[in-house]
Length: 292
Image: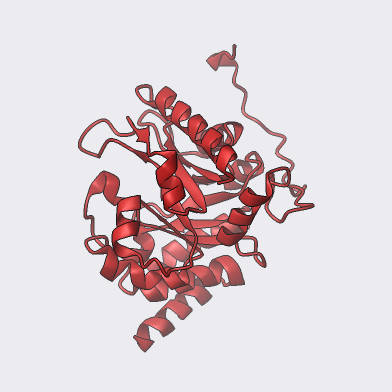
């Protein structure tokens, strides 16, 4: 058994030695099944190896928050510019056209809201995942939260079992326990726990020292956008994460709460896929905004 007073901070991350992608272009996934790889290849651009995921699953915790009052009006027009859509089954069914060919990463844990004890959740059924024709499934891991850590890790492990059976990748979403510091050591631990339990993708937060988080997580890492930032700052966040080795972003509020969401998601894609600097991305945002 590990003792908490003998957890030593890692210092051999091999930052100058890239992870091998021989056989498949996404790290850590060469030994997975064909179907799982095929689904991942829909999510991650095969030229850049990265993804711009559009997250709009906030409502299952927060209700109709700003920018998500009407998914059909605010999110559906953005779908064509995203590499992948991340949402809950009800909103996807009701508001995203079934002719949309974008891959879906479906939020598969449910049960609580911000008004009660968050993350005391269960999983949606396997049949529902198949009916929704998803390319990936996502669930929260509440690492460091005493009340819900065991439940969320058990849920996640069960979801990975289901994903391996069906050939569907699973994304681990790291929550921040209220007693945990938002630093590279915590996010590195939470991300590694996701991967140790079978995640094919990990979604976490950018922080200083993020290159260590990415290096110690053997599967693709995408960053959460978090709270709304000014557009240039959000693009700077994207650039810093990509420079540290992130495989993309899963942004919500920094896109759909922007003053020009269609322009913003294209600017984010420019930074993530095309190597634009934050300033170049911001110029693209302003140019597209001016075009209406």
